[in-house]
Length: 97
Image (cartoon, rainbow, N blue to C red; front, top):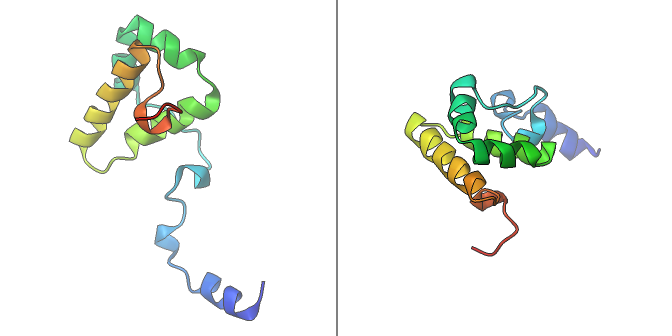
C-alpha cells in the first residue's frame, strides 16, 4: 500500500468496521424465535433448508440486519412467504422484479 492509503487506513473509524455480512466472523443464523416461525410453515422450512449455505446466511442476515424490530418482522414475513412459494426472497432472487 502507498503512504496515502496507509494513512487513510490507520485513521479509519473502527466502529464502522465489521458491519457487512461478508465481514462477519461469526456464523449468521436466524434467532430461535424467528426460526420457530419459519419452521411452523413446513413447506417454507423445507425450501429454506434445501438452499445453499450462502443463501441461508445471506437471507438470515437480511432479516436480522434491519435496525427496527418492525422491519425485521416484515422481512421475516417476506422470507417465509417467498420460501412457502418455492422461490428466493426478493433481494436475493435472480428473477426480474
